[in-house]
Image (cartoon, rainbow, N blue to C red; front, side, top):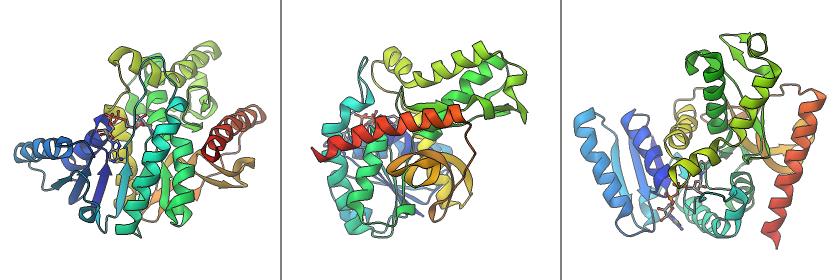
Length: 308
Ligand code: NAI
């Protein structure tokens, strides 16, 4: 299996590193317009493989899209990350131009690929990719819910004082500080609803911490995070290339599901060799549906900026 990662910055390089370190694919191509960056990072990773024993081949390029030809999956992380105090939405103008040109070049060389969109604002960039790629809808997946759910699970495990591995939780809706919806009602500690262990007040705080999870890290680090985003992107790729059929909340086009149309938004989907293969209807209660509708409205407003 061959995977290309566009953007060799913090998130792209970490994605490539996880894919290589865990030998999820045979070949990773890393491409970045910044002179020397993808070459340097892939050489560094290649040297690491001599120590880790990974057999993944690492190839790099500054702008030669022919090297990406016939990629099974392409992860798009190219673009500008946010700085402290910025919202993801503020990145729309710059990143839309970058994502559009990257998608056009990718599909020229890999017409049957599956795209994983990471660049922010991710919901709008995924919507844009659907408009310009000309790929079947199932072959474009926006990555946000995997990361937000990882953050949700982390905060839940802290509140429960247990290992994150024992906790399951899901975040749906938009990938924005105010648009994501941590589903506390459905979260569980080894199958037992967390509502049995945590008070409503604690759960409210966990949800609030999750929603600003990215901003908290941006403030601490000075730029947006990369370890969990890279691992989350690699998890989506792994479910595709190994046909794992994992349920991962991801940004996909809705055609009436969850009461929405002509929008890409985070919902639980089964991910396998064909991309996102099925949208799971988890039967939101009225309060959750209302939040979902509000989230859709905010994302739709952002999508409208693309047309201006
Ligand atoms: P970064 O600045 O470290 O890396 C971005 C890279 O993209 C840079 O190396 C830059 O040279 C490259 N680039 C820019 N234009 C390009 C083009 N036309 N072709 C190829 N490469 C190009 O940024 P970082 O931290 O890696 O974040 C990347 C994007 O991912 C940002 O938009 C960020 O907001 C987003 N992000 C999304 C997450 C999600 O859950 N969806 C999580 C974390 C970040």
